[in-house]
Length: 239
Image 1 (cartoon, rainbow, N blue to C red):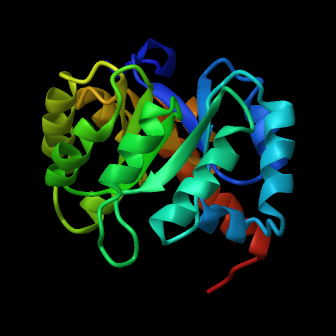
Image 2: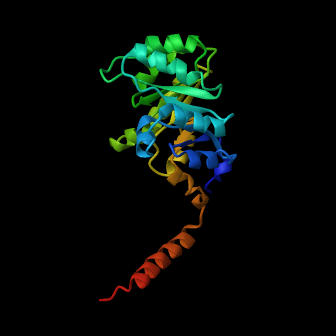
Image 3: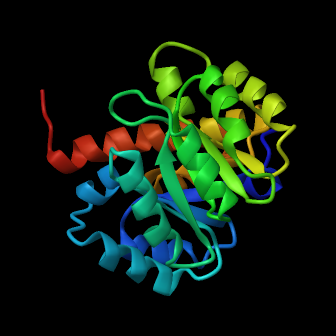
């Protein structure tokens, strides 16, 4: 028996950069938070970072929202992180696991977390990265560890064992939540639950498929056959 979505323990965060869609999703009790990143913002045509972010925060005042720094120098990342954090108590600052030179932000994270700035540590794909960065966080400051499980799967690896190992390791850090990022299909929500992840980010296209969870497969099969038939009929295809 497939669990209903509201029976799962995992928290669903909406991932995207469409302000109108985010405001709508904010009305749903199913959505517990929000994330975005510069690539999604570019895709959505966002021109002014601060204007976009503050517009989002005017709509979403309680649920956590993650905004990412875009500097490559750690001093610049720190400056941007302080600005982003100042926008609201529900704001998490996304910091990548390294800069473009592959250098670790360990000292930066240690400094920001000690100041009480909530961090969403992003772009992790390796368990060793989790073990390396976790000690940098101050135990009194909430933070999120975002592992890009979908990208791990893109390489032909099963992300579930990696996520399970990460969760077991992070159980020693009560302030750190594990996030399953970059899902590729709705089933990833159930895999993330199996791996004991605390959070999963879901794109709007996936959120619109949640009503199919638990759907009778024979019924779904018949709907598919009817769709093929109607589409061919409507186009007037002939042989």
